[in-house]
Amino acid sequence: MLPSLIRKRTVFFTLLSLPGLFVLASIYAPSFNSWQFRDIQNFLGNIAMFLLIFVLSLTPLIQLFPRWRLAQALNTHRRSIGISCYIYASLHLLCYIISLPSSASILQDFQEFLYLQLGLAAFILLTPLFLTSNSYSVRVFGYKPWKILHRLAYIAAIAVFLHRSLGEEIQLFQTLLIFFPLFLLESLRILKNLFGLFKKKGSAPPPVIRKPRPKPAWEGYRDFRVARKEPNPGEICSFYLEPVDGQPLPPFLPGQYLTFKFEVPGQAKPVLRCYSLSDAPAQDHYRISVKLQRAPRDVPTAAPGISSTHLHATVQEGDILQVKAPAGKFTLEENVRKIALVSSGVGITPMLSMLYHRINQGLRDGDEIWFFHGARTRGGHFTAEELEKIADKNPQLQIRVCYSRPTEGEKQIKQDFQIGRLGAGFIRTHLPSKDYDFYICGPNAMMAEVVRGLEDWEIAPERIHFEAFGPSSVKRTRPLPKSASEEPTCTVTFAQSQKELEWTGEQENLLELGEAAGLTLPFGCRSGVCGACKQEIASGEVEYDSAPAADPGEHACLLCQAKPKGDLILKA
Ligand SMILES: Cc1cc2nc3c(=O)[nH]c(=O)nc-3n(C[C@H](O)[C@H](O)[C@H](O)COP(=O)(O)OP(=O)(O)OC[C@H]3O[C@@H](n4cnc5c(N)ncnc54)[C@H](O)[C@@H]3O)c2cc1C
Ligand code: FES
Image 1: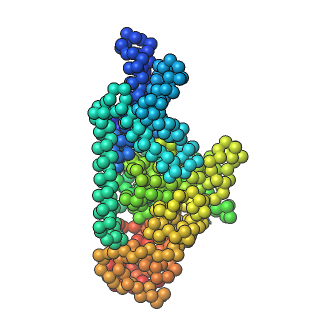
Image 2: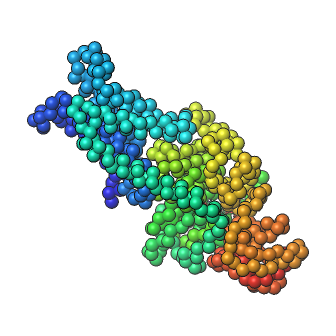
């Protein structure tokens, strides 16, 4: 309740302006209180100091209590707090200047009193921070230099501390008490970071452990009602889905997808398709965003996409859809702090889920998110404005966009994008270092180019994650490191290819096992939906973490989902 209230700009701006209103009331309604001019000056200075302490306390607060929603809510306003601090400090200085008879006496005062020199130093240090507290400056400077510049606030705080302690009346003890919460929070933060550092140094690097796949949140299909259908730019339509049984939804991992079974009029069989979740995990609804698939340009007479057309044209609010539990391995690692989300077209959907999740968690000091996206035009860029708004509030989020065919109007109005296709070169020019985990989703050509470019840049294979929305030709040239596994080993034979391979659990499924051994095997969705990877079993048995949507039938399996139960011979 309180965090949601605090998040509201109107509420928070009102709170920030209250001291100013109080001062106005003191000036224009003397009966309101009996303050002298000097009292007003001191009050304004104190407010500026409190706001500076407040804004500096947010970083340790968020680091120490990353899940505290109130701290997260306050953190969304850190820019406004900083700006208000500067405005109150300016008014404090102005009052001081007005209170003196001449400019000569100002000069004399500054020469004579150390506390005044310190106050002025603090004000000067805060000036560039005030001037650069906007997204434009972050873009122009680059995030890292901008952040270094804003560390001046700490030096300004020391100057303010001394300015107040050594003022006309020495107020060391009182000032110490005022600054104590900040000292305490910063000390705890430093201790926490040091402790983490020592732990890291002392222990050997952990082995790469393959996480056990979580069990599906429910078996089979569950009925969901379309609570809202929302047309979006780029021929995308979003569907907000609520469970018909009214039970709370289990959280999913950002990046996962849902599998749907549609009864499409005119289709002999149910149509199975996957759609990524395009929102942060929530208890009451899921959201998917579906691009209308028109006939390909080189086959204009082909029928448009079956399920996307069905969803856009036929499915309406109130309709019931059959949905399998969230699944997929293309998910955001929780402990990774510096990430680059790279997408093109409707490949943006899993990235949105990852981004919103991180923003909802609250970005901590040291977190960085770079959001690279490619679209044809800005008009067709799904969530363009929403992303800009989020970036405005979160300086640790950087957005870089390429439009391949912007309209003339777009070129004239906005210049903060590159004209052309999104590629590895574009990403490399913007990132300040290689120290990121990359999550990539989009058309095959873009993904292949980006993955190759990142490999050439010597990004470790385990830091490059990608997902295709259909048959994919993207291949790693450098294999992933071997992972530890507790699964028993057995032999998998690909009979036609005359390959006998050992299953040690390093790979996720039989398709990956075959590919790692250099076999070219057919596949499509890699999600157990399309059936393209189906292979006949000559002997042995397979198992699935959860039953795939497509049914391979008897004596066959879906390579993209199956694991051997023991020695296995496939006809492939
Ligand atoms: C893990 C995963 C996540 C996904 N997430 C999303 C998402 O978030 N959003 C999203 O929009 N999609 C997503 N997809 C893709 C989605 O599952 C569907 O593949 C997509 O919507 C197309 O399905 P469709 O039934 O509309 O098209 P289909 O009927 O499968 O047709 C695909 C294309 O083939 C063309 N075609 C049809 N017949 C012919 C022919 N004879 N010759 C040549 N071309 C032909 C159609 O015009 C169409 O362009 C995801 C896929 C996967 C695997
Ligand atoms: S690749 Fe589609 S089911 Fe396996």
